[in-house]
Length: 401
Image 1 (cartoon, rainbow, N blue to C red):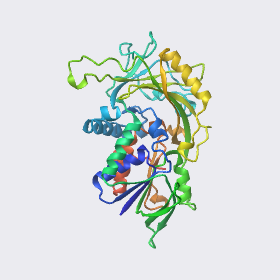
Image 2 (cartoon, rainbow, N blue to C red):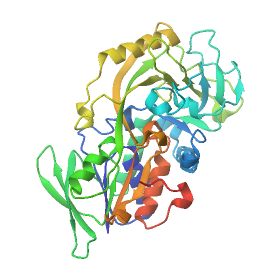
Image 3 (cartoon, helix red, strand yellow):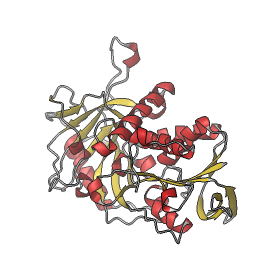
Image 4 (cartoon, one colour):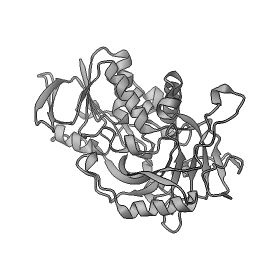
């Protein structure tokens, strides 16, 4: 038996990571982009939450947060991908325009969190002086990581277990046996134009915003629709003279030199969007995003993205207002996260076996919205269990089509 995973972002690599822990069968990762982690997996904020979710997503959020914590504890995640406790705070009330869908209205995901206390005692030093904060999480159920470094760790671990990477390559066709089961998939190396046929008895579609296109290519006569729409997000990575703070002199050696990160959610009334700001480790940078657009075109591959200078100018203006002068822009970025419609589901992902729709052996895992990094490990864990034939509703409930 062999499993082929289309998409080597954080969902695909998480799936391969957990599947390769127990399976001795062939596992193949197929990635179309010539640059690994060129979209949300490498350019997102990396904010993690355990209990900021609607009831339909609560169990997946809890499972994934706990897996993130376990992975970091077992593999020195603080130093390797910046896993840290993170205090969640709101600098201003971030309420939706009509209260219906924060994701599509461009307001903050902090609307999903229940506030715990009003306090200014844990204000990050990198914010402008005098900022009054509403604390939503003290760090026990929120954390921070660098998603690019996490993805690299997951991929390196997979390859050490003989998971095979094919990149840049796209899937062009599948073959079934006379009995109707999957038997192989043909991929095209887009650099050399060489075709390769891989054994394939289980196929996982985890290509993010490109998942519907992959599905249409492989199953052109299918009546199944993958209802995923892309949402583009611009971001800045900033270096501030006020972060990270000097090494701590705490009495607990385990936390010496390891300050908590901060997540700050606020509103920019002038620009009509809700900035989200995250201090991160281990590089000691600050991430600023929140300026999203559903009209920004999805490129054929992630590396063909084009940064909008007007959006970057808005983010820089916000940075000056909230961080003051003296910061350095390390990276400008645009990436695409994917959520599925109808929008009333507010970013609840699809984790589904398409066998019920006549596509035996095919699993889709996509549509995570801005919670892709946070829910990545739980999603990968569940898909790995599905590949092995286990019913995962007891872990996450039903997140299918």
